[in-house]
Image 1 (cartoon, one colour):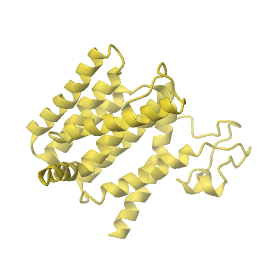
Image 2 (cartoon, rainbow, N blue to C red):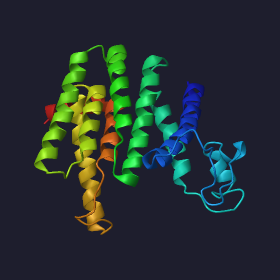
Image 3 (cartoon, one colour):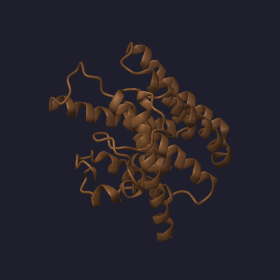
Length: 251
């Protein structure tokens, strides 16, 4: 079992290296195929030893081998995060089509999170990928498409109402993302998704304002909190619901 989880971790950090390319290039209209990976400072094309997931960053001391300019540690963080999340998914899902779909789900969440942090946008192509693979997940794993549809329209509908009431305070991308995540999670997990996202977003937002890292006029992306909540809910939603009702049943 440990070997299997290690394999998921290795797959994850390898995919994470590709996700870094997507996060950096797609929002600015660059191809993810060409040009090949290069140092952003000196322009030197990176070799195989420069692009070993996670390890290269530490072996090179976080610097370019050629011009010695420091790299952002976020590249290694994205790779490491992807590996950990893939391995955790392997604790809930057996090997097969369902786990593959969850890997796609996780990869999309990571890309959406970091692009939203950087650019305050949620790209439609990743929402579409989530919708397509969410339908496959509902077919192969959930076997209850009505639950998936209810979850989709509940999460997306609530966010759509907030979008109109806030007069643009909530982004259109957040609404679209909520529809896609609701399809994956179904009912009642869609309610857990929104509850967790609003709690996390509220706590972090208050902390940012209190520490003056953000002002009331600064945009605070909500997509990352939806993504974090979606991953936790997909893996642990039923357990959280059970613990919630058990807590009140003993009162």
